Image 1 (cartoon, rainbow, N blue to C red):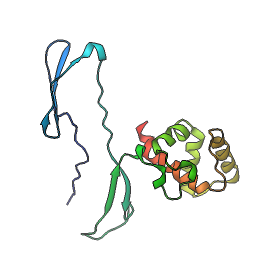
Image 2: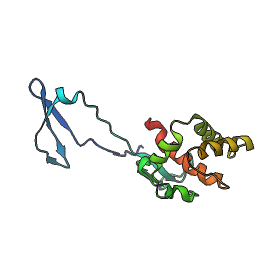
Image 3: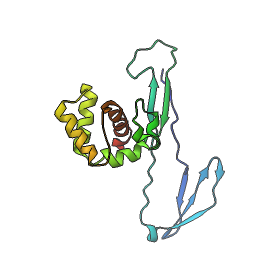
Image 4: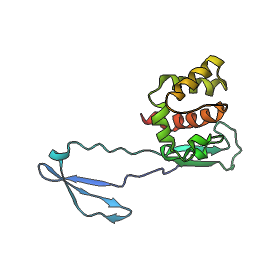
Length: 168
């Protein structure tokens, strides 16, 4: 037996084309008809609609755990980009109040070295001394001090990478 989750539905359910360069969109939002909107496609070009699907942010019990029939599994869905680093266990003070999406964009996204070291740390649970020195230098160049709390920094950057890497 499968359980279905309705994770999100587009706000615009029905679009009908009218005329040459104009399109009239009849939108239904929260069960109410939205006022007619005329769009001049020549001025804006093609429109690409992007819908961000919610992601699983946490699950209890953990994924892969065997459960008995009728057991309750708590699953939290949300947008990982807007989550504050404060919710990450062991987050260091320098990340408090910052969104994971911003942290990802500034510290992880375009840095091959940092990405590789996060992956290595996630798999092995530690870094060698030379890898830790390399990681510390990479982040210091971006104004982030690793200090003695490698775990706290890695927890935050790992969460930022997990919730944002597929959005690239």
